[in-house]
Length: 456
Image (cartoon, rainbow, N blue to C red; front, side, top):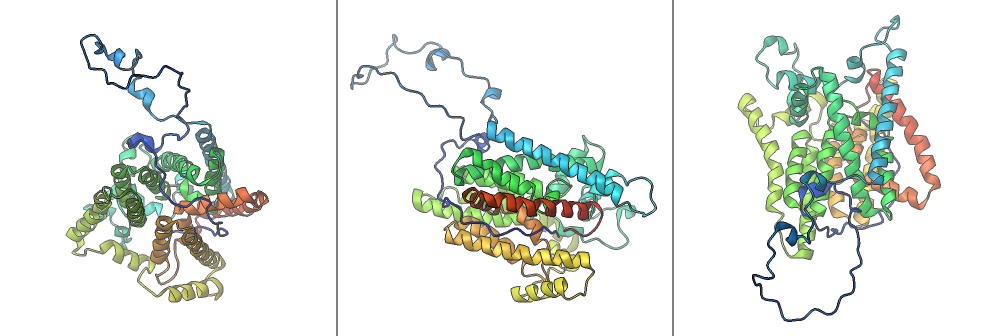
């Protein structure tokens, strides 16, 4: 369950989704800068003889250095990917926005205490640990089916609806960081840094200059629901796995793409939509390269959801226990798309709900419209894998009793942020207009979340 705020429709991306023939299949190269290669001018030398030289004792190198022209290979740590100027700018922007959200959380704690008569703010864990965080905390601390009766809520909380990836990482970090809320914040902080770096690397493929890759990261970090990238939610961790998986697929490193996508499928069901996009991308590149060697690897990401379903079946006798928990807790049973739209419209404008909830339903409607326009533009640009990814997300979220979580899901639509970046690069004045709308909405949603009101 989640919410995010709407964004105007992105412009048609400037580069089609043809696979870029990147050379290195090394998994470490997934995040390696595309600008680290250097060019050199080869000195002119006389024409070499065309007859091959037969190896003899006189011309066989006798030392390892002779094989490399006399230079010792650099140690392994020196061969790790380095950050270039654009990466450092993106990380700096990321840290600044984290500080800004911390300031918003601090001010919200003082402005909106639990009691109107309070003379001190609430604890940090109370401010940032809202809504879905409690589900992840209970799973990480007590498991899905705790044996201790004290760990069982009086009314079951449908925690089976949540995938185990984030709780498992949270429990692992908790071994080092004893305070649960701090551990969750640390997971999102580190994962978010990886995610924005990967987004910038993807953007370099589609935008004219490498320096332009800063813009999608900026748009994401000040988007209306950016607060969910900073708190103990799954968005940052999912992006930290999904975006490098997409980069690996573009480099034809299908083993790395499959393993990273498998991590994404342990975090959110959206990982399955990513796998579908990878399959489409593999099929399209196979037509150009004449090989489907990457396709068998893409069966790997299906294993985590299957194992999770098997585990729930062993405890409940229901293979779809996670789906039925969503239906019980959040009314996610199937309805026709027009029925879901009509129900959400009534909730937004029918005066049947209090104004804060009605406003969130309005955000759901706008986010759905933004998603539909984004898919249409991607189809027009023949970027079929990305169109498949977002279309499946819209179908899953748009066929429930009503819309829920669509605004927050926009954080996961990286083509949206790259498309808006491309649009504002061609129309520079619109960047200021966009930020003047998006940044205040981001603050409003952050205050809404930190004050304990429903924000997604």
